[in-house]
Length: 302
Image 1 (cartoon, one colour):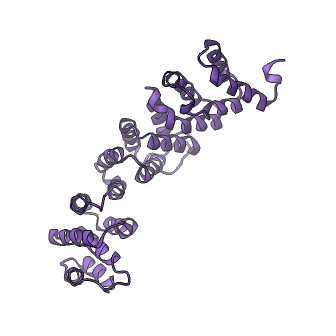
Image 2 (cartoon, rainbow, N blue to C red):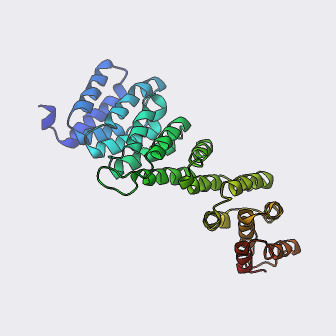
Image 3 (cartoon, one colour):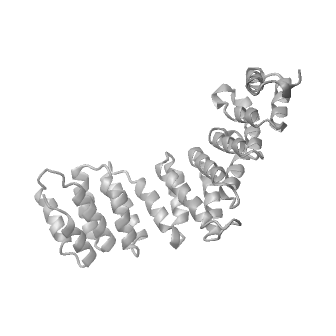
């Protein structure tokens, strides 16, 4: 019976059965035929295999199959393969280019570029993430050929938002540094940096916040938004808060004052404030900048 006469699930099962036999060259011939055939459901099954099912040597040989599927004409296959590349990318030098191209292609469907961006972030390869970021920054505010509104900006926002929640701190900081060079994208850089501050080390956290203050020195409104989005909800000990807030107040300036108010006010709760904390808030209510004074007056002293 010809393979095309078999039920779809049977054909998928046949190709799945080949997996344990990949030490035999003939098994690879079957896989390559499946990749070249017009069998989208079988191709999706080829994307769903785990790297743990292969030896290291076989992973390097299988990864190019996933890359080929990431260029398939069937969108479901392409997206499934792009998602799979998060795990397979380290086994092929061509994976980074495949993911960067799909994530920065202004003609790509949303499902395609989002799958590519998420895999880039999960993989966490700094070089590939920087290539994608540079390409998106170069596109800037251009519209795509379908007239979509700010397609590169949307992709860059998705990339930065995903990095902010992801595990790869070094890659996140590298992208933040690159994005910070472009005035319109400073908010993305600020959120990436703020999300990586470790408040368990108050001294280091203070230095990181000072970096943020410098980055946002001319963007007080953005600083206030960032405080409301992130700083007001960060996990920090009372003693650590006192150290950081005192340092920011002593530094002076509008943005430092806005951050200091946020750190002090978030610790209010139901407990009575220490005298030192009360004094810091009163000091901020006498701040030279009217916006800082206003924020400090909004805070309810306990």
